[in-house]
Image (tube, rainbow, N blue to C red; front, side):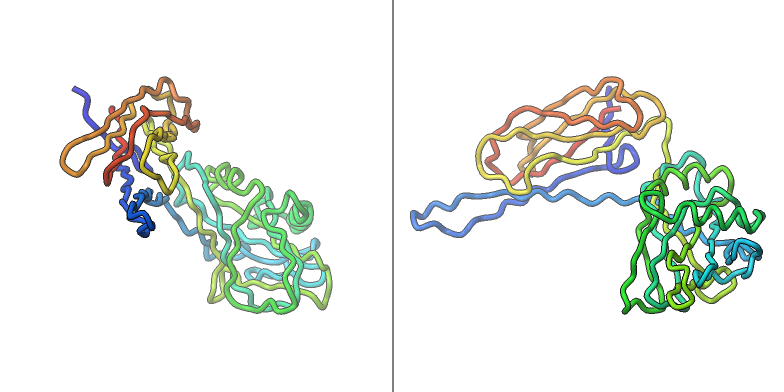
Length: 301
């Protein structure tokens, strides 16, 4: 006998959609059409905060000839900086969904600057190689962040969602135990600058990483694809499911609707050999919406 296993985020956790009946204002003819609003719970993801190790040159500054700072990250005149982050807390095979950079600016004046990819290990690498890597990735679309701050830009904590190839690059770096970024001041000016606290200052920089870990058998409901407001009448329930597994998955998806005591609707579709990391939209049976409804989406395993 098949057991019902619900799916929310990591496979088989209950996913439900509550459709609340809302009464519209009375019409002049006395007939008040009812509408129904669907509420879908937000997904939550695994999060990890990554920091530099408390060791010289996990953050720092270079002028291309020497490493001029062992901790402070200084984008000023012809110097640029870097930050390395310990990624050992991320599980092998993790899929990186987003990376947010948090840095404490200790000095600034109207900076134009970038967060850049760094294939060079700046802890052990030569100053010339570090500097070249920072400069090479400072422009769009390569830069993880390309920012032109205003004249009112101030010191203190600043956060930025990184883009470009950062998710893939961080995922590939997990096996190395470290992930580095360059901090490039594109002004190359003695007047316009940006300086961050490093590993040895009070406010260490860090990356906030949103990630998921693939497992052998894992599927998830991505969305229930119906309008946020539904009037009385026929409509077709739809849902999108995704395989988070490491192998192809075949499974049943059942939508049931009850009036609070008994099921008034049920529809089952079989998904066959869904490829890892791909999604599929399911079209379920047509139904007439007439009551306050509670939907639950199940996967049969």
